[in-house]
Image 1: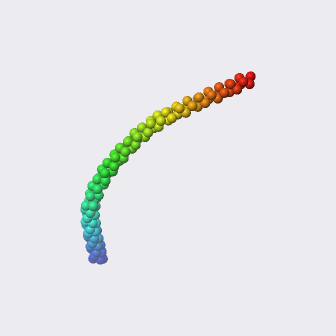
Image 2: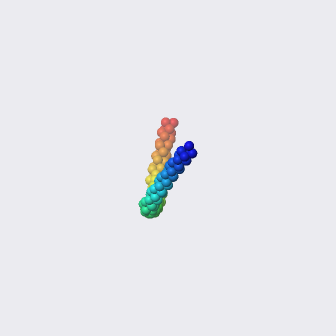
Image 3: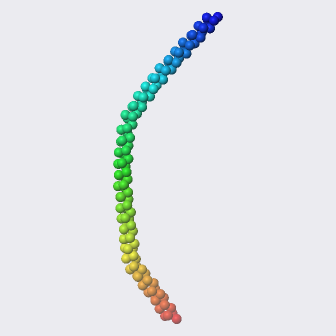
Length: 118
């Protein structure tokens, strides 16, 4: 009985060693695969980051250009608004004078009509 127990323990120990060796081999394979993956990512990611940096710089330059265009547009819009108000004042002044003259003429004619009736 002792011999059978010793044999069973020996088989269990050998099985445990085989499982440990298998686990160690798989761990080494996984680490190698991870290292390869990290190297590939490193090789591919750094150029992408550099391209992204260049793209962001170009985008910033374009945004600054658009900001300049918008600023000029706002200035031109202000000048057009000022000019429009000035032209409107020049055009409306004679119209207001004529309207006032017409109003006075109408009041004078009414007053004259009333005077003639009275």
